[in-house]
Image 1 (cartoon, helix red, strand yellow):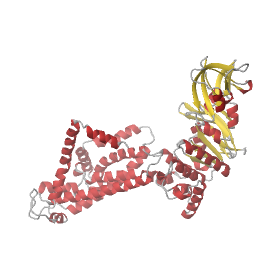
Image 2: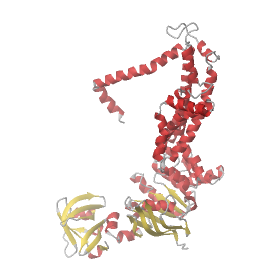
Image 3: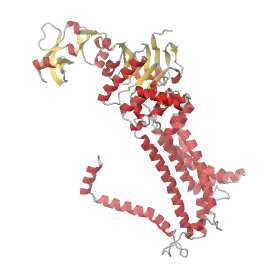
Length: 328
Length: 283
């Protein structure tokens, strides 16, 4: 029994008929960490989450939570709570009754369960909405209620299925901060499924990149961003140029690239295709002479010192140390 | 948002087909509601008047006659018989179609065949269904009666209807509500009672009401399976073929009022429920 981990997946496989959604995934998730499962749609991240939650049976392998094998246990016996993508709030119950639902199922008396539900409404700053029905709330408010409803179970692991995807961009950033705050304050593990690398980088202590039912890389966001393991990961997390170099492939961060005379430094030549002004930086995309795409993120004062436009010849260079060799 | 500009442009250039179809629709409305309107008016015929215009004064005397057990017809008892039967039919229909609706969400082996078997009785000639059931009872030496053969005959009609209606209701039901309930520690029974049924309740009320009205005015299947005591539609039919007086019209007015009250009340309840719940993203 290894209690360094809140959740441990051991050679977990999920098959639907003949297709393999999750293939032999082993993943230890350290105590009280914010873990993001990241990947394009169909990569198996949601299936993985649902198997941890117990809403999907496990074809092969084992799942341990707090050292106990929960592979064959129902959701409620696992010490997990799940927040669904569409929140799945019960439309016929008030916010207070939604939050108190799990206590009611356990037979807690009305006064006591309402008292505790109010505490958790306060935790997510929704105490003024106790008597409202979910249909009368905005998306962000519904999400807070769903959070309170999950947290009142005092789970040791909270599972979140694309929790921010239904929100507008402004609210998304705000709720992101809120999720991180809650995770820190409660000191429990959050496992958060997302297809947004920006979200994962902002939140995760541990970022797990999945593709095709496999875990391709896991580590801190900084490790993954600075040392992507493959061309797929470098492209998926963005901000990198993936280029053939000598006998292999390299990834070079776009913000470590320069335009202009390259001298001895490694470089590629091509023509500017797009210039995007992004505020603090300007993104200049080029098509190289051998048909690759690449981009440089230039600080705005550097760009405006030597502005270029679409169609101009350009040479994109980087320092030898900025190149990160890729395995495949 | 859309309505205003569309209406404005439509009023400028309405094609001739608009007027043609408009006339057709109005003629249809007159055809549909005209006779009923005549009946409602004539039910207030004066005591000396007959079954046609002109009105000879106005009175409610024909309404009073409904409650007097006549020689040919006993309207009050047949009314209560109909209500009793309709209530039982409605209850059984809800029970079976809710269970079946939830069960059919999962594709089990033979679900397709079972579905077609269940709805086949919707297309069977209704009189023949009643005839067959009546014959079957006679063959087995069982007396046909209200809560045996007539009940069964009506269920052949309301059950497939209820099943169809429940499919539409269950289709809009999001599975993640049930998963959330399990996640929050509900047993399968608690999940059904506290989550599934309450969320489906507006639809279930609709099925109950539909079955109630289908049963309440069912004629063809009931007539050969009812035995000794008539339901209201059978009693009214007997009355029409034996004697004509404005009492018939009064009965028509009263039953219409009852139907509208029941339907109006149900719609009110359902709409209020749904408005309170509003637009949920999961729905």
